[in-house]
Amino acid sequence: MHDDVLTVDPRPHAAAHAHDDVPAQAARRRAFAVISHPDAGKSTLTEALALHTHAIGEAGHINGKSGRRHTVSDWMEIEQARGISITSAALQLTYRDTVLNLLDTPGHADFSEDTYRVLAAVDAAVMLIDAAKGLEPQTMKLFAVCKHRGIPIITVVNKWDRPGRDPLALLDEIAERTGLAPTPLTWPVGIAGDFRGVVDRRTGEYVRFTATAGGARIAPEERFTPAEAAAREGQAWADALEETALLDATGADHDTESFRSGVSTPVLFASAVRNFGVHALLDVLVDLAPAPGARRTADGDARFVEDPFSAFVFKMQAGMNAAHHDRLAFVRVCSGVFHRGMVVTSARTGRPFATKYAQQAFGRDRTVVDVAYPGDVVGLVNAADLRVGDTLYLDAPVTYPPLPTFAPEHFAVARAADAGRYKQFRRGIAQLSAEGVVQVLRSDLRGEQAPVLAAVGPMQFEVAQARMAAEFNAPVRLDRLGYTVAMATSPAWRDRLNGQPGVEVLARTDGELLALFPDKWRVNSVVRALPDVELTPLVAT
Image (cartoon, rainbow, N blue to C red; front, side, top):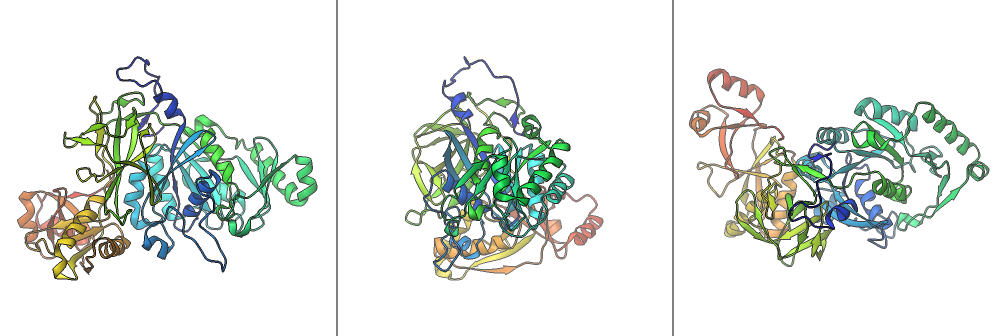
């Protein structure tokens, strides 16, 4: 069961302010994220899903001398240069009259904080595994978050068109390392590297794939009876049937209740770059993934989908529209109906917020959104008063639980490369702090012109530098500091900690005081010298 989504009996439809369409509209929606280790094919799968739902006419990932177009979800220059996702993206797709809200997540471990926040906004996750590498470290970290939050997981074994491991061995690894019971819905015909199609275990049919040039178009699929499949594929079909018989004997059959309760995971075999097996994933999302339901509030109560409008901000993003330099707050609708122009209340400030400029983001492109329902993601433009984690509501007050924050392990002093552009420098640093790209720390000793940037991973510094130069025309110079540990403290201990060799206390933008140490051994020595010192480890909330 989802940590923030409650399984409860439906409330009477006579609830105050209820909207007759809300339960039906919520039932049509699926909000999900794709999680994986870097280079497992996550952005390529995102593009393939957009292609198969006809949101785009041709996939961006094309191999060959004719050129390589970039995926629609990786729109930042640094993403395109590195070939990895470093920012989350929201795409809304439609398939079989179901609205799929896909939240693409950063692929690199240095951006885990952004990914964790996105996972707070979804009801299911697709765990993408490289057929040759199996479960990799970042995949396991994100799986642990999904398990903690009770998010049901659909597993996709990707890159089956390349040499890889034995499929039964992969299932064993999933079971041993995650504790989930893998229940394959499809099974590959042909070993890894010789991907011909799959056995649909629900019907017994053979689904045969035909490759298209560069994987740019939807791969044709044909269905054959077992007898026809045996005639076409010979030994490859016989081997697949022998392996599925082993699955039948061990009871590895899908059960929706165990999937949604986090006991089992449906498994599919695919090749995202060739668009093989993508329709099967879409069908599973529509048929098996949970629709938005009642969400748990910070007080432990339930906010039902038919209750008055409520939503929370899970991401801030600037730089998406170079012409306007505006700032977009991504909000997940949790209850009620969103109407563009409505005036809602921020639970943190108690102040009203007008939603006149509401948009839907498709990668970098945007369209105006007039109405949205639970499970949808809305981008609120020029939301300078909003922060990540803020709750917005109409009529009945509500506050949702806080979103994760992480302990930074890398620190650098930022200085404007051009002293004449200090105003742009200050505005850019404030923007990066508000978005959560980096944490910004200050002290009277260092002054406003030399803030300290704090990051979970060093690549965050690269993003900060690239965006400061490109978006604010304020290149920065970063001087790394030798700290690796940050702990929260109180004003009463600021001076005494600053007096300790190798220790520095700075104030984060949210007012939290952080004491920085070169390593954990220095922390221990300070604690011995100051037995009553107030130091609290920073952990993900």
